Image (cartoon, rainbow, N blue to C red; front, side, top):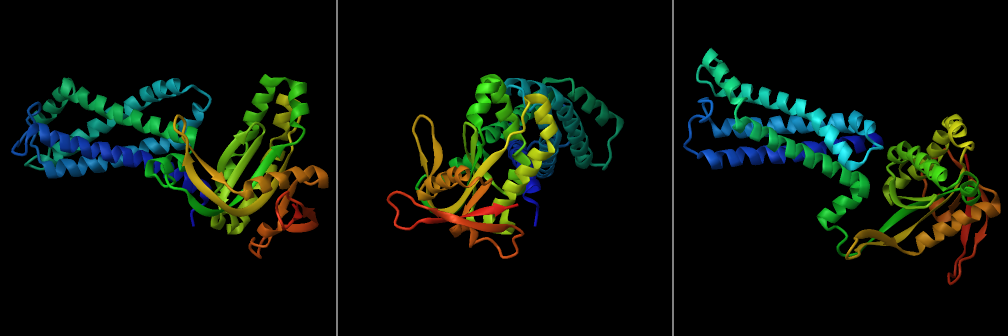
Length: 364
């Protein structure tokens, strides 16, 4: 089974490949529409034209180019511009990718010309025509088309990052246009003494602390297949579908990994902020109604008692001087192979609810 973190990267790369495949295939279809199905040679180069070969090589070449761009973007370039405005990202990345586009088109032109050549090889006159073609507007129009494709892929990737992959795809597919019932696990994670910290360091510095704090959680959330539902100031709500959250105790592992990452970066926090943040968390599982709301600004939200209950569980961390509390309902569903131990504490009484919630401390 693919590790959730690497699965996330692969899905991002596949998006680039699909976008390029669509536009590459579309270009081949536009080309035959403009040239006509009876055309036997390109007007600008005189090189033989075969629609079957072209659509195959344009499609495969575009798919490969998309995978290359996606790999560079996801695995390297994205991190270099993570703190830059969107227009700066697009401008600099476009310039960087321009070289790749020119190389891609040169290789594609040579390959298609070589395959379509009757002799099965390129003679001197064909090479001269290719060089001449690269100086004409028809070549640069293809560069512009490829550049537009590249930027559409970049913008789509950035939109996906800003609003979330799951949210974006659910909007596109209309999955939650009508409300659905599902069982989900929630973790409410809150920074301890956040009000005092904010007052002591000032709002600007406190914002940088929060930004760094959330950034350090990224790997832990990806590695445990978590989904960020909301940021509420210094509180983050992470959610899992029941199956993913219970698999290898992902929901609890997420908390454990976040704590490990913060501990590993404690020196950096001390040097930059003068404190090492700590947090408390509450876990619960239950049925939610998931649906799309809003007219001016759309969103996908969860509604159900489980959210209020999880927030109340997290609030009890102060009462029991605990880092993490879990409901009995969720604890009983965790796999027997779980390496975590739990200490029974007490009951949480909820207004309007007949049954109390039995709480356990998670011992790490």
